[in-house]
Length: 484
Image (tube, helix red, strand yellow):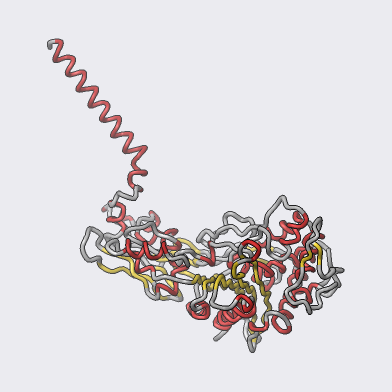
């Protein structure tokens, strides 16, 4: 072999060696990234090669699959009552990443979850039959919430306090996920939805924490009773009216100047939503004690999964005394989701014990065999049964003789707390209207906790209130949950 040929051979071998190294690198180190790349259609082709599994509500599939016209994706997702359940299902799109339950259980629904494979699937290398996701949603409660909210921008969550089952998750304005399923038409729908200033794709029930306003006074009252600041909801609180924020010359007044808020009891202060009482109470407790109680209810929990990950509701830290006072009325930097405020009412309604809320009861294979069972969730004591009983009584006073009268239900015991939270710099924008509540049937063992937020409506600013806007929606949902 002459020198030239030898050099060429060595060079060729080096090239082959380099190619093998590169191929190995791509296969083992870049393979997953390339497979997950948004421009790689292989995953989408495999996902939509066969009909998907379904999401189930009350024994009925609320999803389906249909053939795609044209293109290389054989099937597309379909939805029944898409707008009604959008906040639950999310969407499975040929063009965009799936969300909500569609995203969390994507592998189950498209048949790639290894738990679905039979021995024959493994031997033949075929994809398994897709599984199904069974939810806890009550269609009657869901429908009542969506219809009662109507054209208002807002959200609602309903929970069974005894079991933790989430009966309803509503976010308005809603949208029809079907508009996003087909790659041929999804682009135009996406542009319309994402450019809408009302943000219909935002799940306001789980993923938009906002100031909870006076509904947070329930947490403050619970902290005061648990820490021995007062031993009863009927003890005077020695609260001046107006209350001057500590280290300032700013007086904190009450919305109703004629309300008996001076030296009011906790019961009366909840009944009339007295700002002076709870601002002073927060300062007397101190931010650390108040934060500790808030965190027991679920605030500052960054892993609140139902199983959809809820955004964190926040009770702040490192505040001065005047800021601490404002947290006592659910302002300053306190934020909460409707899910969080429903958890507050659920814990109080359940004797002080919070059962972890969940939206999926079971995940099954195509034959109905259970892959996951979530019907026995964890529970924890938040406050003593004495504190819970006293606050239930005070919440009932709010509904029977106070600011929550629009939530009264014949044949049921109802407790609640209204809230009107400031919005914008110097409260320049329309306030948020809140209502958190529970109802217990007088003739059965049924009960429900509901939290409601109205972010925006056509009501005049002077007419925005938790009782006027939010309580009637909560009432409709509670009635639906208790019926039958």
